[in-house]
Length: 411
Image 1 (tube, rainbow, N blue to C red):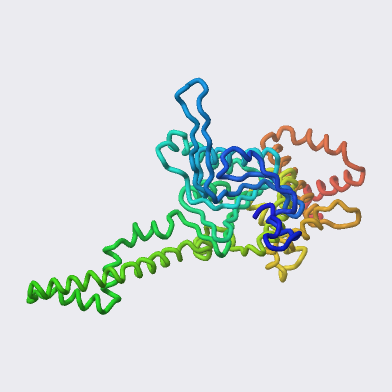
Image 2: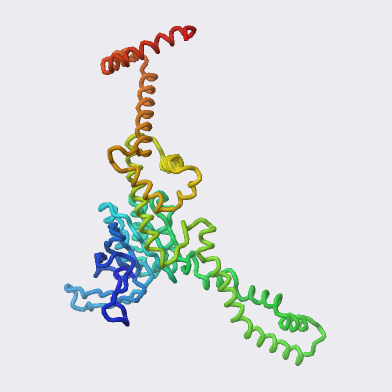
């Protein structure tokens, strides 16, 4: 899926993976093999990758050479599960990618953490918390994608939820994926048990309701009651599996991408065939926005991230027109606009550079004004110092302004 493969039936044909051909390089391969981490390129953009091994792997624990009675052990580890070693590997990879300045792509397909007694002794909770700490401190774009037919369940959702780092982490789901804390079967076992199924059967199935109503009669003979109970039991055995499957399907509807988006826990729903293109343009946009944010913060360090986002949107509308405001959600259009206005070319007017210049000027004026208000005794010294660094024409303009302020009637 990541690196591609030779075509299974057509000789000499290559089936492309998600990343550029020949760029995926796995790291830490022999350690914690239930998680796959590596580096790759997406349309030429270097990225860090974290994916899941869905097959069962074997962990070999060597014998202790100091203990002649010890033996080597082979422990099977299920796929789609975070064990203590694979959780630590995930957290370490996230930290490494952050230090390298690489954006992160996570292909999420976990059913949760291993919760056995040995895993608790091996500190699975601590290493799971390491993942949260690593993502919270991550300062690069991090895109989490639930691929087709994959699922994100239990504690695995908790440790990569976008609310951990809302400035950088975004969660996307394929339209064929599923997500939720409990799987559909588990939800039915808790919220729709046998007694609830029997109530539903009695409400919906006429035959079952008629037999149950006859059993409520006090005038039945022992033989007739026994026969009716037998019929009722046979009807239950026939209908319970059917109603159980209906209940599972109903619970599964709450785990669909549409429902996840309605609840606001994912950013968008994707299709696998378009996901590579989408993430390419999304990554380029986020990286260019980071460049613009750094320049804006250098000019005005007190602005918040939400304020900067609204400013970029406003500048986009000013240059492209309010009619094209809907294009702000189109990553490719915004990338082209950002590249155009971030380029250092002579003769081209950059809306971003011009606005940053005004931001820098306003911030400097605000800083000077605050200093003078806090230290009024230095106001005259500041004026004298500033007049020594301006032109003769500017001094004349200042003198005119001061004269106008002294005598407002003359104007």
